[in-house]
Length: 227
Ligand SMILES: Cc1cc2nc3c(=O)[nH]c(=O)nc-3n(C[C@H](O)[C@H](O)[C@H](O)COP(=O)(O)OP(=O)(O)OC[C@H]3O[C@@H](n4cnc5c(N)ncnc54)[C@H](O)[C@@H]3O)c2cc1C
Image (cartoon, rainbow, N blue to C red; front, side, top):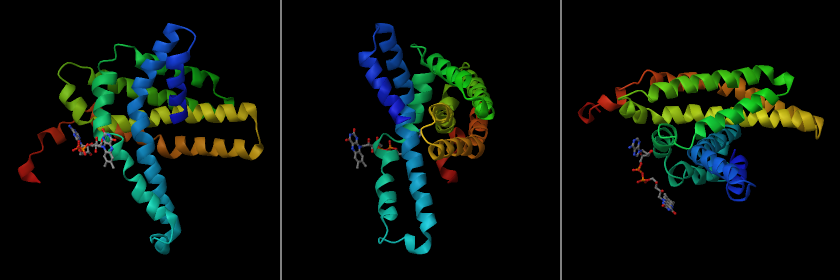
């Protein structure tokens, strides 16, 4: 995903036409809060699993993973905190999307679905369903007087949006690996990782979107005295 964003940086400056440069810049602005949070959250999750795999003795300074966890715990803070990136995504990038960036992302995801290799049909259908869920949720957030709830529940929305973007990336990577067939082991590895993401991670999107779509006021109405 970060390489995809890096390419958008290049295209926003060097694409042949002004329209292509503007589109790349708009897409990059939309994806920036995702690029700053998703890797910072899930890179840390990977370190966490690495500690678990090492077992009890792994949780000591004899192993690098403990150091990596501590170092990477900083990323969801100094890249701009996840909560604040989420408000940027919902408040500025989606609800005030004057550049049509959401439409551009949708077009690219639709193209990836259309070009997906036939053996990834299930994953392609799953991505389309997730796109519909996200769109329905965006429509709810755009309703009149919904802004306070939209911002209060923005982090859940960001998590769902980030997974949708990663689904798009995995579908593109796996399809490309199958078509180019660099080596059977590499293709099987990409395919397995893509399928794992869709089977084990993508179902979380529905759960994250539930309080957002319900315009939950729970955290807004919580009073400090109750805590
Ligand atoms: C080692 C390090 C290096 C840094 N380097 C730089 C640098 O080079 N340049 C730079 O500009 N900054 C830098 N920073 C600062 C960094 O950008 C800030 O730490 C970061 O933006 C978070 O701000 P904060 O600490 O005030 O946290 P806060 O804004 O107080 O946030 C605390 C928590 O509350 C959440 N939160 C805050 N507001 C809301 C809200 N309205 N609704 C819901 N949740 C909310 C946040 O998501 C977070 O979880 C660095 C920080 C560190 C630790």
